[in-house]
Length: 349
Image (cartoon, rainbow, N blue to C red; front, top):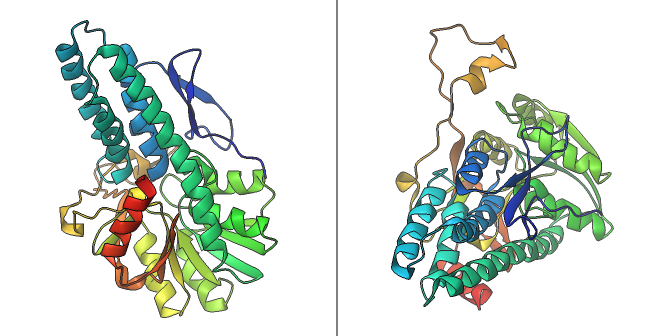
């Protein structure tokens, strides 16, 4: 299976290189972000998206800032770098990985005694974050593959594949690992309104790898479950709190339908996505612009003057989740947060 890097560091340009996901599937285009402003724009415009990929973007963003901040005195350099890091970490509010990636690199940089040392720490730690994400997705995929029968049909929502990570993927990483293990897997990809990340991105990835995929309207999922066409649901996550999973809007609906039809519902997410501090009430759900719903290209689909609610994410209670698939193993619900904490400590060592 061909592995591609969604986001990487360009050594020659001292820039962050990423696949522009707004162009897919019609066009494959690489973007080079040579400034923090350009990277923040890429994050907000969804040129790069997906929680793990945003973690890598945050980490590389600090490395990029360390290269572009021009202060010559160490204290002023660090003050400017902290300000740039703060801008990156708040570029999108819901996914925890973005702030985690930024904070991981900044933690390493704070120990530096000189500007050159700070830049060195930022570069090394950012690459460590990217490599750890790739490794976590492959490990996660292997654990998830053990949950699959020899022949299985999987429903997924949005895009939790290589395009949402540095490579391989979370929910789609499980699919890829299962196929590598010799299992026969077919995927139903919800189109994922309004930006069609399932139709555009998940279908593009899976077709590229020769994995059977069928795109369905989001509203068709329950009917297919009733028909017996779906054996399991696997989704990714943007943040896992004590009481809820935040993922692309529509995830909660699929979880409710899966429970009604006695279909297992799995969340595949690296430990970096788990938030041991916050509950659902503490998390801001991003609301995006009206035109994402009210326009289809240049065609008006909602009458002018009619209000639109465009939530990017929703919260799925843990009691609707069968288990969480992580790089250290499968954690059934209810979650044992002590075990999660111990796993995160072991992972970081």
